[in-house]
Image (cartoon, rainbow, N blue to C red; front, side, top):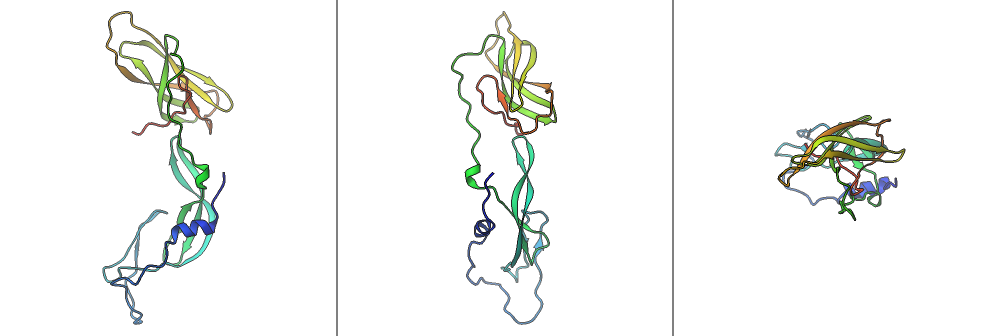
Amino acid sequence: MPLVSAAEAYRQLDQGDPLPCPGRPKRTGLPTPGPRVEPGPDGWVSSAPETACLPLTVTGVTLGTVPVRTSRGEAQVPAWLFTVEELAIPVARLAVAPTAIVPVPERTAPARPLPDGLVSAQDLTAVDGARLTVRLGVGACDTGITPLVRERPDVVVVGGGVTRSTGVCPDVLKLEPVTLTLGAPLGARPVLDVSTGAPLSIAPR
């Protein structure tokens, strides 16, 4: 995927030198309290009240990776890692270019209804190698709920089969979790709903 340059990433971090701020110690030769740094690439720096501002000195940059949570678990994403003289750990700025980031397509209504007894997948709840846990949208009185999957080298399509009730039943959509096992680990393949063709995301817990 395209990346931004280290210079561009630095420009995004460097918002210009601030004006002199109240509380910054003058160069008197006396020691001043040091900053307190929280761990992690997104850590923050705080200082004692008598040092309201602290200039930071960037001394180097390398291209590395940082973990980012995605709809299908954690991914290692390219990032520029800036070494800062006053900090114990580098400051990370994601290197992925904005042109490479697109939103997940919105669900669209199918052109025709699903065949009777076939239901759509609403979302994913877990991915563990070749095991997927999917929530199907079923009727309140449906029975015989069975996960269905079509697996290809570049995509996985999921849905479900049900037996419809012949009696009176409330018109309520129920989310039914089912687990299915693929022939190979999911990897980077998208999981699509059989009804809309839209990619499924991992539902927030």
